[in-house]
Length: 219
Image (cartoon, rainbow, N blue to C red; front, side, top):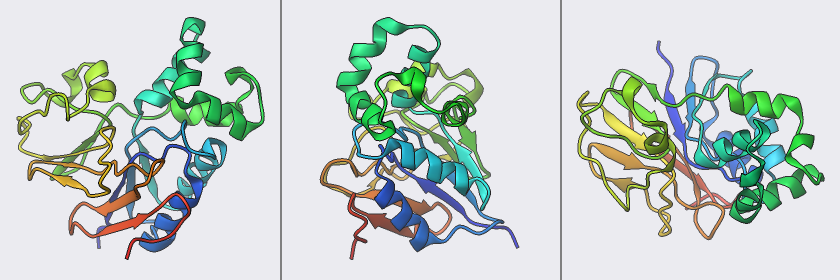
């Protein structure tokens, strides 16, 4: 019997919420978990969140998508030091604090390698998964990286994709804590680092598990 496909929205260093939704949905070895990016910044424990995801990869089939916050850190580590102050103001200061270090170069290599291995997009039989947005007329392999990671659907909502698959996206925080469901597109970034929730969703059944940044499940 095929396993479930569970998508998880933007984590933003909220380890307690991540542990709560994982306990609730209980991924098994045959399940695929697609995480939609932005594992770091803003929340209190980016270090712990990445460590939890690395462990999760040994528990199920983990497919991590790269987020714009993750990409920004990787760009700095690749030599674009002029981005450092922007990153620190964008939530990077909280990330460094979680590692108890002063510079991104001090982040453990295993965590950096995890981010480097993240995918730009993923697709399953009925759905595809990106962090930010997409251009409806282009196949996934031709999507511009800046659209996949930086475009917000509140600024420019795309239409249905040419593949006719349902898009599962993050990045555009739904501050009311509710999943945005346009039928052909579902946004599951429900603003856990603020006053919202971390959302995990079984994309086949639409079952949802949510927890706030303190790990409290949504009733």
